[in-house]
Length: 122
Length: 108
Image (cartoon, rainbow over all chains, first blue to last red; front, side):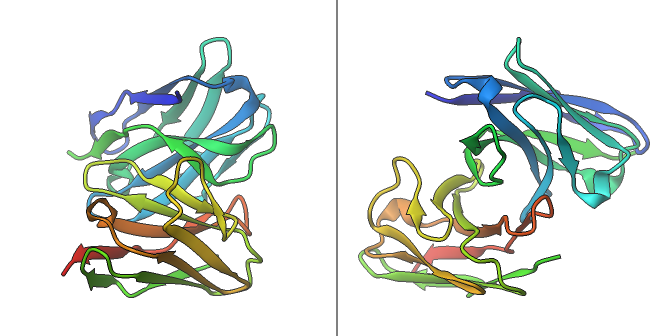
């Protein structure tokens, strides 16, 4: 079955950097777009970014443009989120999520990881 | 940005009752709406996509309807495991994806 396992979260000071990873298994990773969605403590869900199945196309929500970079390594079945210039408002659980359809991104998410907590605090 | 407004914020019902959750979009989004269930400490789970299609493995008591701006998630007969927070999500304005603020379904 499908498994998504995030790692790399932790506590970082404002202005710092973190790199999240999401290891995937149980499906043909190279055929699906992959997303990151975050959830601030006690709050709702916010879509962050997507990378196309082949890594060529990437989209970001406005609040992270220029600071976050998504990438993937299809040989390792892993998607990454490089987060720079972190702010307090980036504090959240970060989930990686698989797109529902193959090749083209449909922006509905049928499998999610368990999440990794990022805390930005001095 | 398309705003999704969910109502009610909290719904108190008993097992066996019917639950009706609403999601209203600030502009027309065709049928590009999904519903997710989230339990405390867990990741969200996809229930319904494109307004009315049940995701793989989702019980038939969950159904979705609507198009345009008004959408409904119905749970025909509540089971104990259905008490959770429910979110709607639109993909009409991709990549500007938005979620509703959530409806908490609690045991009465």
